[in-house]
Amino acid sequence: MANKPKRLLEKYDILLEHLDYGYIEKCTDAIELEKIVKILRSSQEGYYPDLTSFAERQLRSIKPKSKLFRQETPLLTKSNTPRGHWEEITQNLVEWESDMQKVQSDLFGKTECLPRELPPIRSSNSGETNCKITPKEHKRIESCDYENWDRYDPDAELLKMDLEEERQKEFVLKQNERNLNGPIIQEIPPDELSALTEAERRILAMKCKEKGNDYFRSKEYQQALSEYNRSIASFPMSACYNNRAITNIKLMRYKEAVSDCEECLKNDPTNLKALYRKAEAFKLNDERREAYHIYCRILQLDPNSIQASGAIEELRRQLPDLPPANSFQVQIEDETSDDGYAALVKPKKIIKDKLPEMMQSLKTTTSTIVEKAKTAELQDKKIDILPRPTKKVLIEEI
Image (cartoon, rainbow, N blue to C red; front, side, top):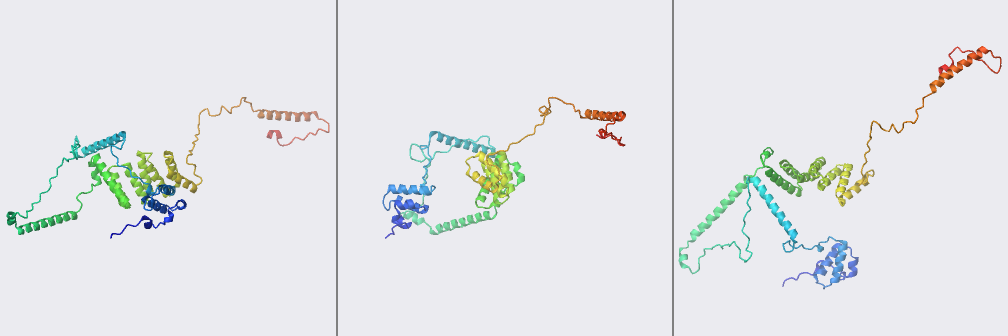
């Protein structure tokens, strides 16, 4: 007797009392709620649509990105696609095919690449296929065909089988020898890249970039760096500079990562991926002010960037003197001209300095008074005539 499969209630070790409104409303464990929703959807314990929808709403409030809410997207076909969208897809495919034909013509030197006329897979009117496959005929002797049985030689058939086995062994040995001889395709040395055409160098660069991406996914960063170097040496591309920048960050070569990002930004100044990696390299190299300015630039290009906003808040907590993200610096220039502001401070009246004339008149008046006092021989006691000093008069010193 075959073993019956376990019920989901037993498999998930959930009590029957837990399939209740009160318990589901109080439950905060997302994993347990997912199990309850699975049990209710299976209808093994009964069909409760209201309880199922209530459990789904509770799970959505706790874990909105649960895999139970994923819905399968139907296959894109001409019938379920808007006409304009389908025509756009068809036009893109036609353009891609023409681009590939152009690349093929550049590679092989063909002036024209005629479209390939491929037979249809099956006819539209009838269900019969155009390509008829003839079944392989097996030469088997009928059991009642005694004439052929008389001509049948078992030793010859065994010899054929042995020869076929020997032929198969020789084929395997040749394949092994080919593997031991090393790779047939040799890498092109850098000095011979100039002999290739631009299309060939672009294809070679794309292959090296894809190989570097495979190394990067397997966390072999040194090998990935060498492949990215080959790709850039063959044909420089912004995407390859970006990939080499993140590889240098993983190898803690921050200055090289910044230079790669700058090379990428020369061709595309609004490349957000290059700006993010440049800011990350500055931040890991303890150049937080430079990283802050890069994050501000990202926020100007993408105001809804959560990563840039979080990084700016973190850097402002570390460095409180940093300006706000949306601030800008005003430059003050000193303008010098011939006129200047001299006309604004020029006085209305020009007054001549009279101090030298007053000093000269005071000197003359004092000497005259002294001489008159001596000659008059005044007897008044109130007036004291000082004797004439040997030195020059004080007023002269002034």
